[in-house]
Length: 205
Image (cartoon, rainbow, N blue to C red; front, side, top):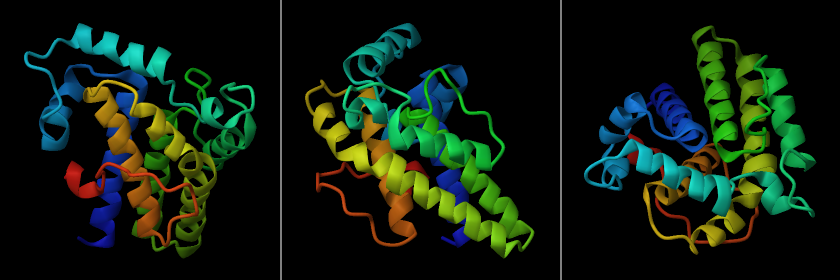
């Protein structure tokens, strides 16, 4: 796979997983999920969008809110701390409005931001703008190293206490795709070692 193809695949993966984490399933995203075996195999039969929406809210709204603040802030408050500040700065750097609901430190919001950063990198490469490519790559590394990857291990540990579902798999896959993104750009930062479910881009192609 060429660099451009990898970037396009990464953009699609971040955008889809981010939307699933933030918004759940709608008919269009359901078709996207059905087209990807690694996600489709976790869909219940028959598919009940209302039931899946309730499960999405139960896991990601109550049991395991996927915010950096929940895992990193001393008081467990969302939208606070270093991760949230970096994500706000990264939104500003690419001229994208930073959402307040959910907050910037939500896993899905961060993935959607990474999709925007990768899309901007693709545009910079198309225009042979090496300076912008370096800048955008730097923002991707900073988001991953300082705002996402540090809290992925405790998120996965907490996830193990939840019954398996489409949504637990989406979280695991999102963590794997984020790790794959960083690994593609060099060695992973030092974080607590945990077993991560397979989640490379090959699962979303």
